[in-house]
Image (cartoon, rainbow, N blue to C red; front, side, top):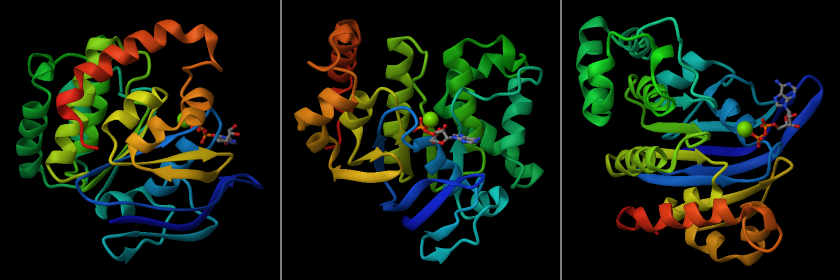
Length: 260
Ligand SMILES: Nc1ncnc2c1ncn2[C@@H]1O[C@H](COP(=O)(O)OP(=O)(O)O)[C@@H](O)[C@H]1O
Ligand SMILES: [Mg+2]
């Protein structure tokens, strides 16, 4: 279990997270929904050690972390895949993957790369290519693959569907479900909240750094206020009919993967 208790974190002298408490069990997808600026990315940074929490505790499988150290977080079994497919464009796909394996021995790295290619066979033919030459979808696969190189027990995904075509999003979500099936705890932050909720076992709504609603993914999806106000669909967002159409199609396509 990845567990946050009363976490306060922020930038300079301002707190963005105001006492967050929640947990991510193994073999579960936990979705975080909330408008831009709610503190979703900050939550992931506080977990992966990119930010040090000012108050509260973070523990992994019963062990309390000191916090504020990315190395400590990786060693504890946490991988963070940041927003915006941050791959190194001037390095090859293989080199990008090797970077993600910095915490493991050279002999293990090769096996890990093979495991990642088993999950994302799309990358196999591109191993020697510069990451910058990959399509957006392949770059997102590489970013997730790099996170998987440390064989994490918990993986934090920040907006993995952002800017990708529906077909590619469906593929990424298929992998997210497979990671859960393989026993990993997944903390999923998504701009496409509807889609995230459709595969999430647990979910919560984050508003101004505070959790204001929790439930199963299905419960939040069934909550009209959440759908209208936070998921960019429904009566409060008249301009989003197109988004609703393809989100609906994607959810239908993902039906067999459904967990809740
Ligand atoms: N590096 C930073 N320095 C200062 N403020 C930041 C920084 N990153 C984010 N913030 C602020 O923290 C708040 C939460 O941001 P963020 O966690 O990125 O939200 P979300 O991911 O939900 O859109 C916002 O008000 C944002 O402006
Ligand atoms: Mg964000």
